[in-house]
Length: 233
Image (cartoon, rainbow, N blue to C red; front, side):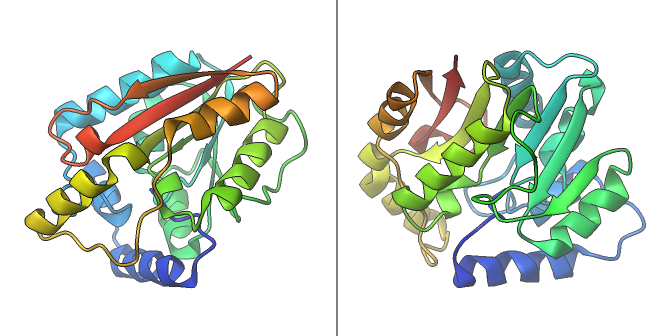
């Protein structure tokens, strides 16, 4: 979810959604996904889609028991809840305090922090893998995104995989916004769109390799306009 932001308008959106979702005795996966923004006209995420997302992250990061894994922009913990069975040791951060309170209630075994994505509260090389799902679209611009990527690499072990998922493709922006208008989805506040070479250039400048794949989450309306990136040693 995109709750780690540097935009007052998006921050207010996510804090409102977090407050609206708060206070339940129990949360289903659908509740968590809705709190994390996957309840819109093009953002519905079925059980099949959930399994697909969990599989892509698990295989991309090579998740295994005891592995130290950070999710940046964890929201209410929807994606982390899908990965529970991997028995990795997860940590989550999000800029929206109401979402973090929900995540703590749902995943009490997981460490959570309220934090800005560009200034993470961890030491260097603290994690064996880092990922972010559905967050970069809410960043204000590419320079801010680059500062976040630098932070992700800083807190990851030197050879650790870093995965960014659900990224809006700049080459498909016009078609995406037309589809979103047709579906009744809001275009305000705006999303941030990325040229694929942005991640390739970032990786190359730091001696890393980027693997870019078009997203293919079944039944997820935004998927055809999004891509994923895996930064490898």
